[in-house]
Amino acid sequence: MTTYATSTWIITGASKGLGRALAESALAAGDDVVAAVRDPDSVADLTAKYPGTCLVPRFDVRETDTAAGLVSAAVDRFGRSAGSMCW
Image: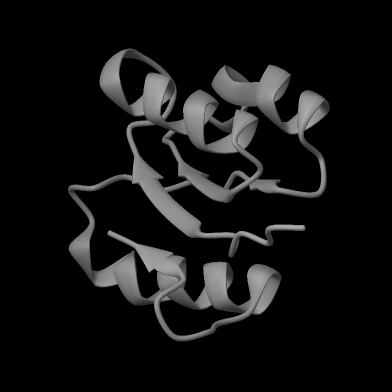
């Protein structure tokens, strides 16, 4: 039996385009995703489909002073292990 490590992704702009595609792909692969978006309702379908592995905090990339809180939310929800955070 082969065991693969789960990665945790922080993806900004996860509501559409490349960010959305990355989030969907990572979730489908069984990884944990912090889908950081300005409007959490825009990814409600992802939180419904992946309730244990998709965290959706409200985040605006223009507000750089809140980035540390975004990382803290990811660690609080999914923990931290060497090599598990994908940036």
